[in-house]
Image 1 (cartoon, rainbow, N blue to C red):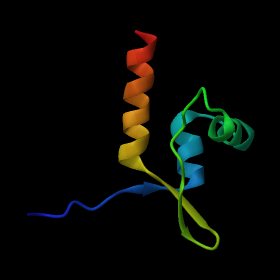
Image 2: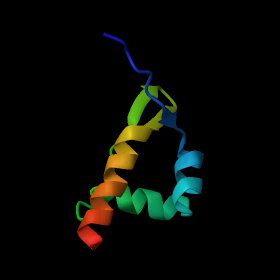
Image 3: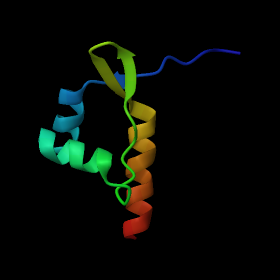
Image 4: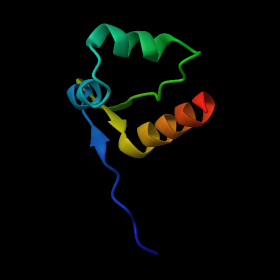
Length: 66
């Protein structure tokens, strides 16, 4: 069985990916209707988002819009 390495994005990479600012990101994180993926605490001052989780969220949003 092979282990697949997870890819994690920084806050800045998430902001760039969605073309949003800090305020929008934190609003999405705190809005239950948006269901934005939770961040992963990697260290005391290190927060990341799992790329696969973000991609799944994007697919969910696309299917809801259709």
